[in-house]
Length: 99
Image (tube, rainbow, N blue to C red; front, side, top):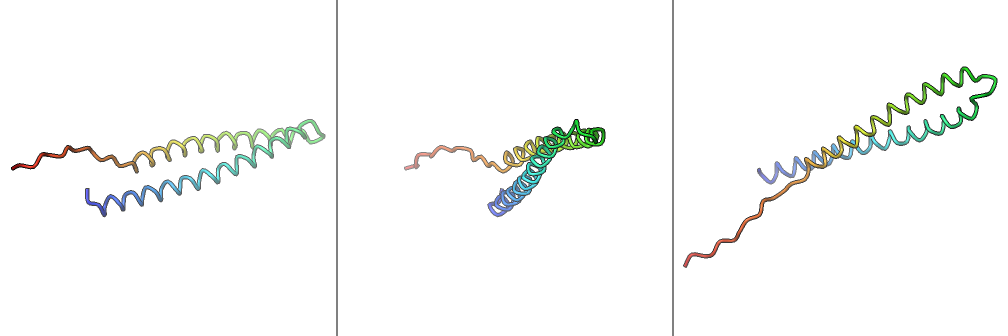
């Protein structure tokens, strides 16, 4: 493979990996926010508006599960990109000079 093409491929794979990491970070922030909101709603669950709160809690729990599944998929995707960006070079043996 030509060295310029290899460098271009590695650069493209690194950009893909960076994009995957950015998406993952966004998901992690949203997951933390949802966990906090769910904890607050669970605290309010037995108040005068408990029916509405319970529906909202169920909805947010479902959204949290979906995001956590997305993060898992992102991890797998990032590992695949990282595996593709690894280049292995075969070993070679030095030959004796012919005299």
